[in-house]
Image (cartoon, rainbow, N blue to C red; front, side):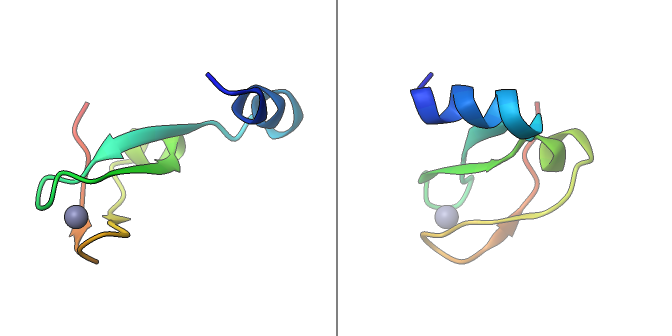
Length: 54
Ligand SMILES: [Zn+2]
């Protein structure tokens, strides 16, 4: 965990997590709340929407 991540968690409680795109395999940082709520995320690599499963 980077210091920035740690600081963000302390300040806002808005945690982020890295998810892997099922289409192109690119890892991107997304809000953890999106995964919890099963909301679609936009891949910055191939611009496709996907829902991460945990
Ligand atoms: Zn992708």
